[in-house]
Length: 141
Image (cartoon, rainbow, N blue to C red):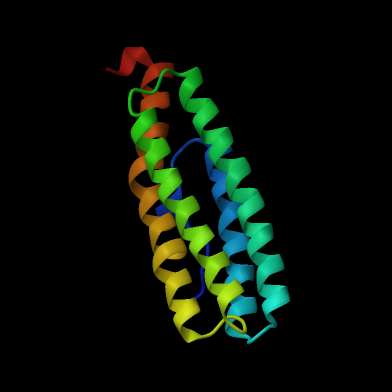
């Protein structure tokens, strides 16, 4: 799999969100590296726990920020977060039912975690950051 890094294409313009995305992507990279190197099932589960824990923290923070600014698309954003959480649960299920990470698992991670997250940041999260920026700068409307 290609190198998974936080770059300028993922910047939303909100420092808090961007810092959390950078950490989240770092954790995803570590998880993918562990899976690709054929690490044990136990290590893969521990790395998934590490990713899952930060994902939940980040989503709570993001949703709280949206509540604070009365973001009109909060419910839709929460639905998207639930989609991601479901994908994480499916990864746990896969690991529990198999010997450990394999090529099929790594492909699932690429599509349901990496690709999903990058698309989510570039669309949904960027919209939140733009809304906050416009709210904070009403003279720019």
